[in-house]
Length: 518
Image (cartoon, rainbow, N blue to C red; front, side):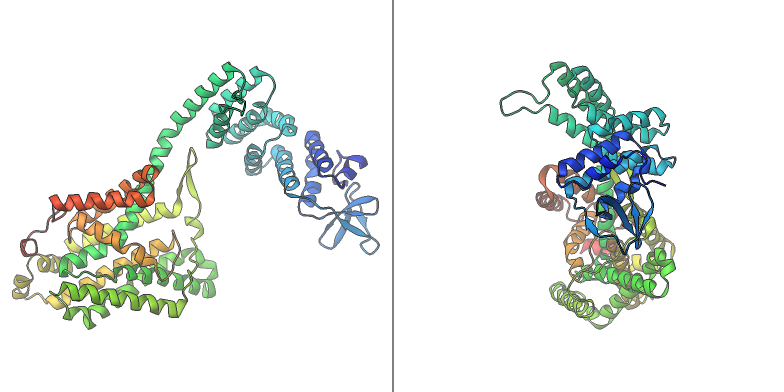
């Protein structure tokens, strides 16, 4: 069977011409003919499997040589093959041509992929195919993309009425690319004239841009709110354990960021074990990494409290310097074990991709999962502190350590359990961070300052204050970034916190009991 019934020998040989323009003309001719049987030929040319053998073209694939015109097998031993070279311009044309010929596919997903490709690389030669596909298409999403592709072609028409209709169609598009095209038509040339000469079309362009901007307001606002909530969730996971240990024992733990880092590396190790021993269950390594990271960091925290920190209570400067030294030791230990370079921690398939809100706004699934994960951690902490005996002891020691000791509560035991709990929660934060960024020895250094800001703003030892401060700072940061930039935005946030603490040193929520009075 011939590979491309629509091609004659002259058109086929033009694909092997030395001139790139001649090759491009031949590709455009294939698109205009609209025969899907030419797809294997174009794909072979794109993959550089289309070659010349004497006076004819052949397709070389899987150790088999096939005549490109007739589809018959050619003896590979007698074929003298010469490659047909293509450049990036021709590769783009070939990809667009293949997509255009797939518009008639019975498979909806294939048509959708083809329509997206055509919308990005629409050319005048594709217009007849696009029009035919539009007449037959019933799927709403595919039809919208085809309409956009048609408009992008017709907007270059010499007829002002055709351009006006194309502008109106682009105004109904749901992609930011349409807005960019319309805005480019309102620019002026070097001689001062408009890129779009017709005043009526320019007015239609302004109306279309206004319609697009109005339609994008809600998705963009939702995207900004979600970005702030996502950042707030990460800050919350980083600061939650610090809020508990700082509130209970008054320990300024500069090694808290390294607990995040250890949790992220524990996730990396679990991923390696799954890849080696349970490759079929790799998508669920995160589920195992959560308790593993908690256990590892909690044990490290308990060991630090029992061996070092227990001797430094009531000595804040020595505690700060000691925990800072511990953080450097932990960083160096990780560098010795895993190396100084970042390690790869991949997302499971169910956390890959995102939810498209339109207007070029996508909510990544991994960040959506982290938001819910942070909410579950907060719920778990609230239940622990308010519904368990350990929580009762923690609250008692926080309010009045001396009285709790007199009532028979073993305050040293509460101390190491609580410090271990705080470090374990930081380990959970490390699991979350491993899913959204690089994992390296310096990971914790990026979050320690932000964690302290959250704790101080929310109120030392206050769960509700920590939640509100983390989410609030996340939202403020994300809304300031577009206007002030990331660095200047952080500076503004820091100034706000300093002014706030001047007016309310105890934070948003003050502790009750002896701790607040001292």
